[in-house]
Image 1 (cartoon, rainbow, N blue to C red):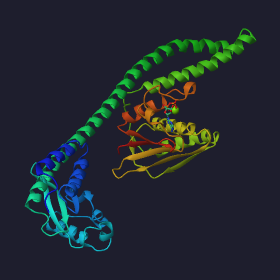
Image 2 (spheres, rainbow, N blue to C red; image 1 turned 180 degrees about the vertical axis):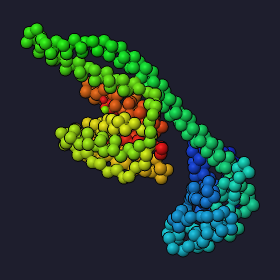
Image 3 (cartoon, rainbow, N blue to C red; image 1 turned 30 degrees about the vertical axis):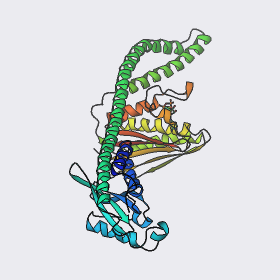
Length: 395
Ligand SMILES: Nc1ncnc2c1ncn2[C@@H]1O[C@H](COP(=O)(O)OP(=O)(O)O)[C@@H](O)[C@H]1O
Ligand SMILES: [Mg+2]
């Protein structure tokens, strides 16, 4: 049986194909294809050594399912024996592979790159002697090319991933900086406005207590109410602006703060036909301001309630993970958050609620969590609800 094409032509063609492989497995699939198409093998498998030393099938052509399911522990004679055994299995193998008869002869070519053995090409020929010297030479060329391409693609893959991680870190940093600048500005405004309002509050209270006319008394009462709303707003602004870690925080059991948040939201939920449920396993102490934890959770629960205008369920859950970190989750069955909005969620003033929203809820939860060395994450899919998860390191 002579080779179907000239070896150089085959190698050149194959080099072109594998150099275009963008992901590591692409080069290995091309190798399995070439083994069948160019070398005339009846079946081919590319096995990879994984980081933990095990071996797995990365690509195969004409392999019976029993090989795909094979868990191969070691390269070498054992692998060869097991592949041979699997290929020779008369049941299943024959159905899956009509032209590979029970007696196949597997050949193994190790894949080496940079001195490391990282895999093997296994070829099966039905005909004895079919894997001749010319084929062996060509197969070795294909394997070497695929090894280089696989390594390059793997490096490219790693590079892309670390690029993406870098970008995410940069975005998080930008967000923290923006929050910091905004906090400074907000603190300044809140301070100046309080100075303006404080004397006004005094005057209005005096007028309300002793109005010259009934009309003025009514107006003073209204003004007093508005002033209360205004000073409460300034208070919130000041709280939001407080970016620096507060001194004097000690380790506390977060459970009471979690329960407070739950109780504060129960009624709010019921008014909107949303059942808020609490399911928290025993937690461990964390360094946190309990009142901030409560308002952070309230923010998340209120968002979850607001995401379900037609009613529904909100779950407040919590526990300890394997690393001893305290996790708290708020889950809803709302519409989820569209992909395009996810990157902006924690941005101050980002809201999709128009006039009704402030866009400060998630920004302040984010700032609070950061200050306490915790993390905040969101899992959401359109139409499948949203889960916000907070994690705090053990004290
Ligand atoms: N559970 C949720 N489900 C769907 N969207 C949410 C949820 N939580 C937050 N969002 C989105 O994030 C935006 C920002 O939330 P937030 O910072 O609390 O501000 P606000 O609630 O005032 O809009 C919301 O307007 C909404 O679009
Ligand atoms: Mg909100």
